[in-house]
Length: 395
Image (cartoon, rainbow, N blue to C red):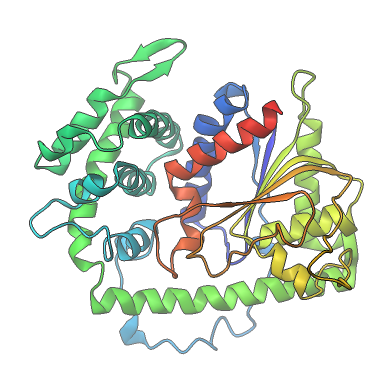
């Protein structure tokens, strides 16, 4: 079963982007592959990238009101770790004074601690290491689901001891045999986890500092300009070029690629679309490329519902009776689920607008600024989505 992941707005190619794709692909293979009955080695993931044909800024973002004094250097302040710490260790999950950060989070939610640790480790991992981290994350989440509040969390006093204890209790299978962490790649992956512990410990005290908050504001301002720019760019492209618009064509080509990769054993195509990606996919299936077929669509943190309400989909007409009317199901879309975090102000529901669409609530545990970008860095999200898609697959 080939999977197409369609990213959202404000996505641009960079070393960080490549790492995120590797991490996310490893998670798909470790969590979703088994749920769909597909071996990780045979699970194809297609990642169409359309950022290069999206919004371009003629004055190179000269419109952003950012002073040089507000810019902070350092790798830790620019990636997912800073965002996770800024959002996740400054509210209800803040550890008690004197408690190591991971243990403090784990005592309230073991799954949250695993999410934080694995996201930090994957940020600097190589392609081979993220595959191993994905397998370890799957096993760790299995353990957390069965043991959400283990007694030993109150017996360890150091984050490294926390990791060692967790690794000793999870089993990772490879070719049917229990893995003993003996392979060199597995050892390097565990090394990444240990390194991440140190980075989390040093970054936690700075998570709510004035300087980091200033840098966060600057990143948010830039992201908002890209967000608006990419939406307007897509709409302009669609108006001028229809199905041949650059963004639409890239995503449609990826879905066609997935169709060519189907097997007789499992001929289904799954599309997971984040944010604006959901709008692009719905536009393709309903209007621009009705010849395409998708068996399962999962929109995550998307704006399909509000786009429909604003009349931005040519295939959707305004209802005479908004209480009773639902947009009819598409004949070329078999199942559609929509996942949203209530804290994600860029995520909207669809169940009250589209017939057959199912809304599912998922909490990333992050605040308003970071929830939108936090879904796919969390092993717990991949596990939950894999379970839901696996259920649809069996049906």
